[in-house]
Length: 415
Image (tube, rainbow, N blue to C red; front, side):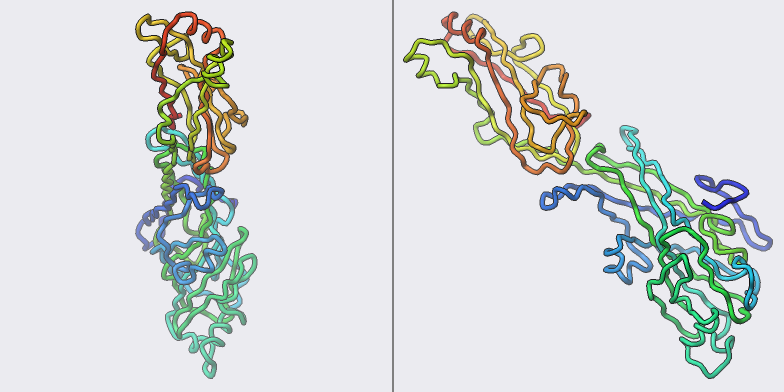
C-alpha cells in the first residue's frame, strides 16, 4: 500500500479539481462459478465467467497461460498541462502505480450469511495514449513512426515497460496514438521520461489485468456469495498515474459474484431399497445345525457423488431409543437394528477421520458433518444393517415368522 495522507482502501474519496466536475465511481461485476466436473475430479476451483475485454480479448491464449483476465473501463485521463522534456520528477510525466499486491474482499452467502474471502490483485496495466499533434512533428521529421515514438520517450517506446513493470511486447501505433499493455508482477512506480516537450496527452481508457484467488468451494454452501472491493483512482490513490494525468472517475468498484453449484447424489442399485437381514451363513445353516445365529445383517452397497459438505441421520417407522427397530406385525414385538455407514476415500468427518462403520442415529450425533477433500465422483460406499445376538434370540424364541420396518437413511447437504 502507498503511504497516503488519508486511507483509501474500502472508502470512496471525492477529488475536486478547478474546472472539473465531481467524478463518479465505475462498477464492474466479476463472476465465477463452481460446478464439479466428473472428468476432472481433482480440479476443485472456480471458473471465472466474467466477460473479457481489453488486452485478454486480443490475446486469449497468452492470458490463459498466465492465468490473467482483463477488463477495459471507460476511465480516461487528461494531462493538466504540458509534460516537460527530461523532467526530473516521475510524477510530472507518464507514470503508472497500480495495486499489484493482493487485496482481500469478503463475500457473503446471500441466504445463509456465511462468509468467505476472495483475493484479487492487478497483474497488468495498459491504455492508448493520444497526442495532440503528430509524433513526428514533436521529435523532428525524417524518421518512421516506430523511431518517432521511441525517441519521444528517451529512446524506448511504450512497447517496452520500465521496471518494475514487464513488457508484453504489445504495441500498435499511428502518428497520434500508441496502444500498450504492461505486466505488473510487483507493486511500484513504472515511469517513462519524455525526451521532448509534450504539449498535452490523454489516455483514452483504463485497461487492467487481474488475478483471483478464490476460496475452497468444497467447504462452501451451494448458492451465491457476493462482495466487493473498491480502489481509488487519481494522484496518491490505488491507481496512481502521477500528478499531471487526472482521471474522469475517482473510484473503481469490483462486485464479486461467486456461484456454487454442488453435487450430492446417492445411487442405490435396483432392488437395493429392500433389505433382507440374514445370518452370516444363511438360514439353512441354522435349520441344519439348530444353532442360533450370532447376528442378522445385510451390507447394502451404494454409489455417492459429492462435492459439498453433508450430514447423515436416520428416520424410523419403529423406534428403539436413538435407533430404528423392526417389529412383528401380530404381537408388536420389536428389536433394534443397528445402522452404520462406510464412506469412500475422500470423505471425512470434521476432524479429518474417515467414516468406517460409523453409527447412524436418529438425532444425527456423530455424523453431523462429512466433507470431501476432493470431488468424489460415483465412489462406492456401504450401509450396514445388523441385529445383535441377544435380539436374534428374542426373535427366534417369540415364534414370530417375520419382522419388518422402514428405515430411511438421510444425506442432508444443509449443514
